[in-house]
Length: 276
Image (cartoon, rainbow, N blue to C red; front, side, top):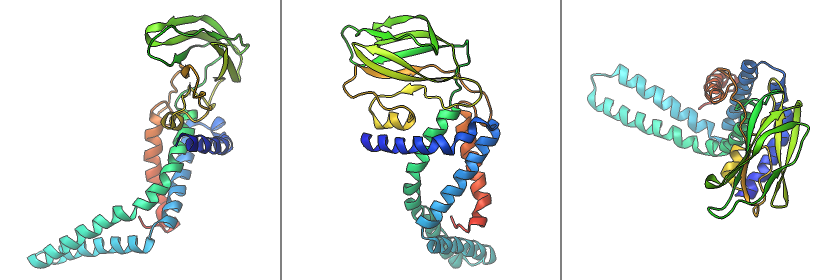
């Protein structure tokens, strides 16, 4: 499973690097809206070609017909009960007909959310701003291995390394020095490891965590390759600032994406001739 997610992330990172590049130059609300619109169109097309549209239309027609019959023949108890039974059966068929499309859509949607989080979940450091770099070490006991952060022109180490044996972590306080995407190098017990650092203004791809080799962590943090399986490090984390914004801010972007995608799907459904 982990190897599959790694390969899918490579594909998603390559596609996202180009397909989502306009986010860097567009206003947050506009890019989030366009992404939601594209997501709605994509999911509707998948639904159309992976679902039994004839069966979906038949079930919807049966629901409409039985609701009309209940309204017209309110005084006929026997007919009303039969209509309610047929209405319930048709309503139960609709979710079952959506199972296959949902299974098909779940993988690309998860990959898309991982890519969008790189743009919206945090903002890059600005020159002169400070952030904490944390190396989380594996193992539940014993002495901490020697961990050193190599000097970099991108960021100045203001404080550290601060070793916290009880939580098995080593921390540095960094001050951003130069704009761009940079690579920080760490020496962990003689082994070289790297962590991406984003410094700049506006929207940039920001990877806050280089994860361990676990498929769930890799889905949530897809940008950087996982740490080696035999590494003494569980994760390398940079505490980036939250991004403000009602449509593209930390946390709120996901709510906006979901709501805007649902509204866009309802508007686009007649144009794409999709029954759902």
